[in-house]
Length: 189
Image (cartoon, rainbow, N blue to C red; front, side, top):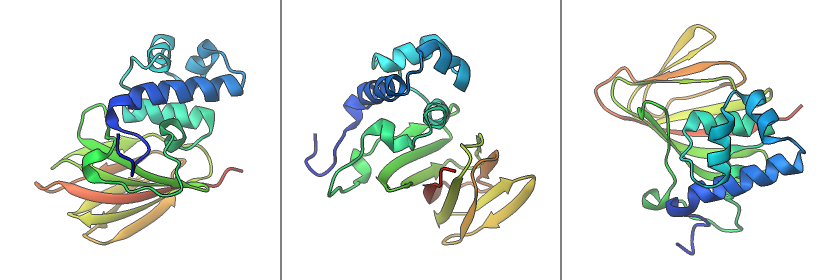
């Protein structure tokens, strides 16, 4: 394990499971009630809590939204000094493996991620909890963002911000991968 980064990919499933169990227990929610609340099977949550599951990005979002916590709270990424090295990072994948998000840092109501969208791929994000705002910058490539039925075209180094509490779609219209940096801001009401 790197001394510069508080986790590594080998124990991330166990860490998510331990943190999920802790947050759920602290809120006094049974695993069955939580499964029904977030629309994830009880068996899946049991496996995750035991550290046996490898949850997709969509499932991790549902868990975090259901607990009303940032995703990185499940990953225990807190430290006074951290370096997020690409080769050491956790990679959260969409169901179709076309979108990869790497949590980088979390601090006082926001999370910073690096994202990769495969050529000619699309990632449809479910609505996040109320008060979530996203800030996305295209670091390399071209991105189309669909929000509320309207499409926004972004080129390299363009940025967009929007309320994340509605479904939104990331689309790569090119034959090259798109690299993104995005910030998720939590403004709980």
